[in-house]
Length: 299
Image (cartoon, rainbow, N blue to C red; front, side):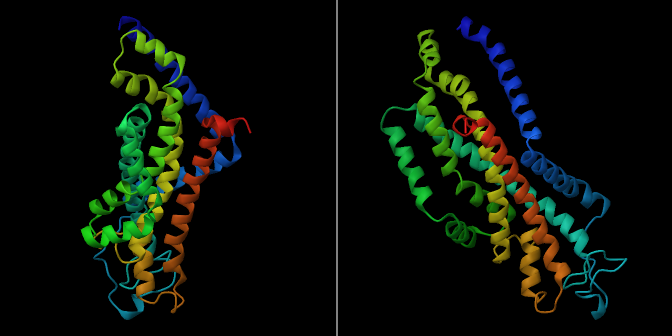
């Protein structure tokens, strides 16, 4: 095992250098640069915005004139059905939407990576069983499944994160497995096994790091899907009513007749926010996938 331990620092330095090179290539790509800039703007607004412009859900309008009022100097994006400031509400919603997307994606990536790594490295019946379960989740329409689970289990923010995360891991598992199947037959794996490494060490220390670039590229794309899933649930009235997100804003806007009353300032900000964030993650994910995926890199 001493030879394996001696080679580990050199392998780590090589992976760090490769990661830096990949990020540099992604930034040099026009599509990737636009995605990074949009994402940086969205994150800055979500993190700094609620601090500079705190949203108070109890600060309702005092008169009928304050309800669904258009943009003014006091309310840059107008007011909602309760007379609350839409601009501040949009910034608060950005924080919740991004938080749900990131946490749900983290659950999805951990589950998908664990299943894909185990199924790809295992040569017995266990690997086949895992892939049959994965195929089952792949063929089930994800959105209806999420809606049913959210309606049955509950509408708290934690439940929504778990539901989205535990229903979106199958594609990641399939990607990881396909890559592990090729890596486990490589010469370096046979050499490491000959040195006495256990299957656990080979899978986690030597194979998993080689799959991480594809996992990272897929993660960025899954974040966009998770944010859209949360917005869809909230728009359908299955979101957490105690937290403000872009989806709950759209739900409230349509429920209270903002579209029929011409209150565009209530509909447009959360809609644009969802489009910008999803577009940012999609552009970054597309660029990273093209750089890190060997099949796409040579095209």
